[in-house]
Amino acid sequence: MDLDKIVLVYPKRDGLIFGRAHGSPYTLMRLASLAPPEIPVEIWDEDLRPLDFSRVTPRTLMGITSKTLAIDRAKEIARAAQQRGATVVVGGTHVTLAPDEVAEWADAIAVGEAYHTWRQIIDDFTRGRLQKRYVDETWSSLAGVATLSDRALELVNEKRDYWTPYLEITRGCPRNCTFCTAIRVSGKVMRHRPIDEVIEEIRRRGIKRFFLTDDNFGLNFRTNPDYIARLFAALEKLPLHGWTAQAEMMVGDFPELLAHARRAHLDKFFIGFESVNAGNRREMGGKSSGNLAENARVIREIHRHGIGVVGLFVFGFDHDTPQVFQETWDFIRESELDGVSVTLLTPYPGTPQREQWLREGRLLPNIPWSLYDTAHVTFRPQLMTVEELRAGYDWICRKLYNPASIIARGARALRRVPLTQMRTKFFSSFSTDFGYRKTYSFRYR
Ligand code: B12
Ligand code: SF4
Image 1 (tube, helix red, strand yellow):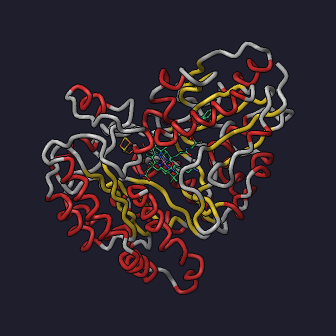
Image 2 (cartoon, helix red, strand yellow):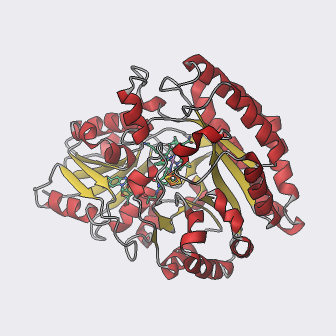
Image 3 (cartoon, protein in one colour):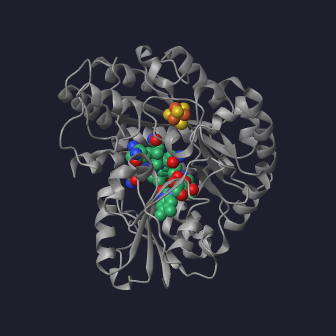
C-alpha cells in the first residue's frame, strides 16, 4: 500500500487559553520521532486548529491518541478519515484500558506503549498486511527510544502555541492504588531514561520550564536515590526557570534530596494526599494515610526547601461522608498549599475500582465517556447520595477556584520566591489553579 503521509491527531477538549493550548502534544511528538525519517509526518492538534479532512486521502495513515474522555471525539474523527479512504490506528490510554471497544471501529489498535509496535504498524501498512491489534506491554527499557527528534520539534511550535512543555524522565509506579489508570498504561516497573539523553533533549528543545509526565517521580527518592542525585547534578547546570513533578508524601523524609532538587531548579511538587479521611487508606496503595498532622508536616518541610506544593485530593471513596468536603476545606485553608486539585473518584475501565462497582451495580447508567473527566459523578457513593457528592464537590470547587481564592494562594506562593526570580515565577504561581478552574468549568457546559 502506498503511504503518502502519517497524520497524528490529538482530539479536541480544552481549546485555547489566552491564544495557546494547554500543553504540547508530547505523545504525538514521541510517535513522530519513532516514524521512519523518509515518511512525511504531520501533527494535528485539534485544540489548536480545526482538522482539515480535505487533506486526508486513501494513502494517509492516521494515528489518533485518546484518553477516555476524548474517545467519542476520536471515533468521529476516525469515521471522517475512513470515509475519505484513510486507515486509522488508535492508541493511548483508553485503547489500553478498553481495547475491544475501540477495535470495533478502528482499523487497528495499539495497546500499551508503542516503542516497538509503531514502526511495525507503519511497515505492515506499507506492505498491505496491517493487523487488527498490536500489543506492547513489556515495559522495556526507555534507552534510545524516548528522545524527541529534530523533525518532531519542527512539527510543533512549543514556544508559540503551548503553555507547558512536557517531558518524561521516569515511567511506571510499583504502587497499586485501586483507582489508578496510570499504572495500567505505564506499567508497575519504574523505568529511567538515561540521564545524558534527557539533558541532551532539554538542551535541543531549548525549554526553560517543563512539567514531568512521570506518575510518581518522587518515589525514586527512596527507591533510586543514586539516579536522582545524578539527575539533579546534571539539571543543576542547565539555565532552567523551573520544573514540576508528581510525588508522594514521603519526599518530605529526604531533606538532602529536597535541597538538591531546589538547586536543580525543581520549583513545585504535585503531591497526591488523595483524602483527609483515614478510613480510605486501603485505596491509597500505601502512599498516603489521611493523617492531617503528617500532611501538614510534609508541606512545611518541602516549603522549608523553597519548593511549592500543589495538593491533590479525590472525593467519593467508600468511607467518605458529606463531612469530607468541610474537613478537606479546613485542612486546605490551614495548610498553606500553593495550589489545589480536587477531583471526583472516577471508575475508569481496567481499574479494580470499576470492577468492584460493576459487581455492586453502582455505576450510574448512560454516562457518556466524555463525562469521565473527574468533574462529574459517574457512580453511587457508599455513605452519601449522588446529589450530596455532586453538591459537596460544587461547594468546595466554588471555594477553591473563585478568582480571589486563586490569587490569594498564588500571592502566598510568590512570597516564597526570591525577588530576582519574581518575573519568571509569576505566571506559574497562578496558572496551575486557573487550569483546574477550567477543568471544573466543564461541569456547566
Ligand atoms: C501529561 C498528562 C496530562 C496533560 C495532557 C497534555 C497533553 N497535551 O497530552 C494534562 C495535564 C493537560 C492532563 C489532563 C488530564 N488528564 Co492526564 N495525564 C497526563 C499523563 C501524566 C502523562 C501522559 C503523557 O504524555 N505521557 C507520556 C507519553 C509519551 O506517553 P503516552 O501518552 O502513554 O504514549 C505512549 C503510549 O500510550 C502509546 N500511544 C499513545 N497514543 C498513541 C496513539 C497511537 C496511534 C499509537 C500507535 C500509540 C499511542 O505510545 C506512546 C509511546 O509509547 C498521564 C499519565 C500517564 N502516565 O499516562 C495522565 C492521564 C492520561 N490523564 C488522565 C486524566 C484523568 C486527566 C484529566 C481528566 C484529569 C483532570 N482532572 O484534569 C485531564 C483531562 C484533560 C484533557 N483535556 O484531556 C488519566 C487518563 C485516564 C483515562 N482513562 O483516560 C491519566 C492516565 C492519569 C491518571 N490519573 O490515571 N493530563
Ligand atoms: S501512587 Fe500514583 S501512580 Fe502510583 S499507583 Fe497510586 S495513583 Fe497510580
